[in-house]
Image (cartoon, rainbow, N blue to C red):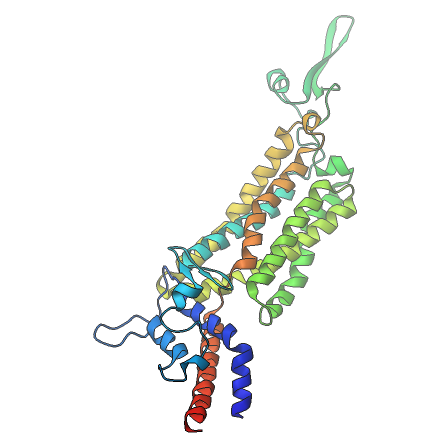
Length: 356
């Protein structure tokens, strides 16, 4: 049995030690579940280091080299918002929550964005406008139909010398029913993949899954911006739902885990406030991009640029997720317990060597 424990230490020890170090390197702005009591021995990082380093003796060379008082200098560099670890970047609670709110905001901007760009025309000159409004509206002109010099009718019409500012419906030549399908198509990927990502997060690193999902979300935005047909845009929107699922089923768990009970409600409120705010921004952003951008100058409809820009806004945080090492407290405690088991196996082996 001791030989097996020693083999486990040799193979897994460094990884488990890094995990245990990560537990102590966490910088929590609003979460501190174990406050140290004055006059009593510290239970924080000193205790954790003692659990890894053990006592100094003649056989200390058998222990892993990156333990003891020099661990912080050797493996990690702390800052006010994060700590650099050998395995990646550990974010403090307030930075993590801020990133989550930003991602959630972009997710809901994307939901509202499509609805703001669905009509056939983003600027519809055929609606009833007075002469002054028509003259100042892009791609419209005031047209007078006269018979024998008398004005019979005067209307605001499309300026035939410019390209109309078309929405998704006009660019893809689809009717209202198809426009509604586009608006809700992302829910297909979202609903199907949410439980899948929830399960995978118990097997694989949650932030790696989140990074993959958000990268897929960015790819979906790129695909939507160049979609040549109704079917291609549907595929892009379904992929967008898959990417969002990777985030929505993981982020609330980390907020609940890291926030102190006294502020947890406020933090969750800030996170979920991004839902209606983001969707409202999406409506306005989509409508503005669709109507304000000149397709003659761009070479494509304004709604395509709206998709591309939101993908660019998400890409940095999607890539950042691949380097984040934060884990739930239960996982970190399990890793710490594993380190203690490995340490006990090493000490037992050392005793055998000494008493030989």
